[in-house]
Image (cartoon, rainbow, N blue to C red):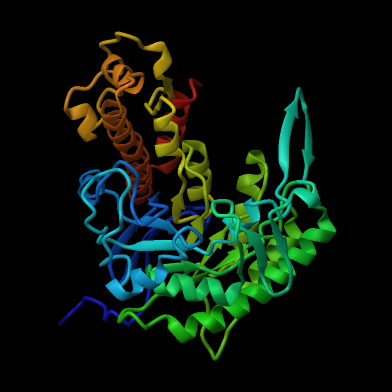
Length: 419
């Protein structure tokens, strides 16, 4: 008997263990390009690869999946489709590393966040003592404008006008050929009112239906099933979050529902757990949920406990490039470790630590004026930070399966955040 799913059989999610609160769980997502054991962190390969790390590097640090960017790959999507999709395409890497494709499961985002970030109104938060002042980008300074059709924007790289709506986003993502796609959505800001969040949420729901309808036309064109997640918005309001979760959970086109759900939106860190609880109490338990854009340890613990299955964020690699090294005793700033012979993180199993690199030796590479040495640092530090977060989700999964989640969470967070 063949237990391997057909390439066109679609995504399958198996729940292995559930926390007593009924939301957090460990499971397995099965796709045409492999399995994802959850909770799992998906490393971000914006342009179809992870900067300074090869596909072999990712396999060595036990990465399970990669998230690429529909917006940034939109113009290369016909070439990717001609190659057979992300798992076959050899990207034109700018870092000089081997360009063999990542063969495991992949996700693409819709491009909505990127075009909204060009200035459709995403708010800026400035903390002043205990008071937060939030404002949106002035209308005349915006490079992106929302309409019912989609988002018109000016490309910041070449200055040319462009447009992405639900149909265009689905066409782009299906040409890229990831295993999981995100429906096109409107991301609001912390400065937006309750009334505007209603308007944007309802527009996102209409865009979700259009996304699903268009996705069904293209999801099998590369010879394997590509799956679609709806994305939840609704800001920081419980009634909106619960309402849109209910609406998207039952949404169908020609009898076909969404394969899973993306949990998105702008909200304050202290609201994360409550917002996820509101959403996931309404969403169907049998479908996977992806928390967009968060990777700090406390966020991952909260996300897991409140029902998120997978996570992504650029932070591990970006912060590595800025001299921040992850350890179980908190993050270290390499500026403070000149000539230090201390290890990065006792017990770390990443290739950088196994090779004996010290904080002082990494700092010397990072501060070097030699581009080759700096690139070497980026690779070593990125591998370490990424392995740290991947290992964290592995250990969280193990604690879930062995009914030790609470003990592991409290022990890890006490040490990491110094009590």
